Image (cartoon, rainbow, N blue to C red; front, side, top):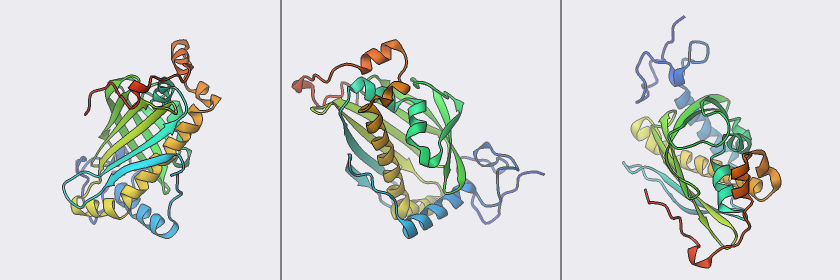
Length: 254
């Protein structure tokens, strides 16, 4: 039996009419488009149940959302009492990412599937959001260890997505800064979804992940994810900082 699209659901901007969503088959593609169903279920859940708050260790620098052509931007920072090299490597660890997103059961299914992802490499994540299995493929498009890396969507539910991860030394140890740019599909309907619920949902998702990484970095759990001798040596550096370098990324701006 071939794949059929429900005529009431508009085509995704990055798929041909003959192509199943997320590369699926007749067995895993329903008549209702998965992206549309995900947006609807997210809205209903957020309005009826709310979302857990992870503000305890994370400060939201800014959140912008406007039903215009400007992409929504979520900026947050997390203070972590651990060396910058350890935090950087944890943030790019495939295995640590899986452990930090257990709520959505994320797992790598293609590309780099374990270890520390590098510049130019890709990974395809499969995750469950509100009982809907989603796939997101990203590529590392910028990488300056231990100060910056960026992953950019090459295929997935969003119309576009780019996530900058920035790291700087601080009096505490390391400040980890997330800059998350994204755009929902479906034109003006997507813009409305961004402002009504999707931006808030992503904000809380990123904050939860940051809190989990902070917990790993500040305990011995990081040793499970940073295993090579050279990387462990960097990760074990003492927290002795030069005050004149605090807040310096030593990395080019985007």
